[in-house]
Length: 168
Image 1 (cartoon, helix red, strand yellow):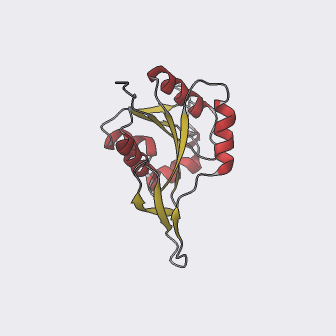
Image 2 (cartoon, rainbow, N blue to C red):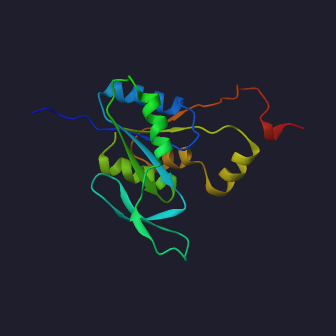
Image 3 (cartoon, one colour):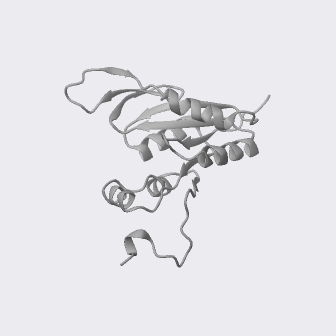
């Protein structure tokens, strides 16, 4: 009997640096696992989770009566395909809805992922303001998961360097 290793889940967003998907593909290759690239639309909420971890969702907009299976962004899929071209890793995509940390955690639980990978954000005032109101996806995952959460640094600020919001 051939045992299939659990997948690696990576959170992906439009405009995200390729480094996150590249690093996630390396982890998946090390484990001989499938890489599941998951994108979350926070303007929608989940109605039903399907067996593969994808979901049906609805808009938070009260004027919108549409209900649909959430669709993965084709531009983002093309970017992932370009980044993973020639790499020896099996990958797939999932379009999720709702709170990003909760959606990624739910998907990881459903597919029994070995880990969740997310990218860090640049240390900008805009990001820090958003994090103040919504919280960091990486931190919320790290505190709410029973599986490892790997954070890929995208633009690290060396220790001892003043951060943008600390400058006089």
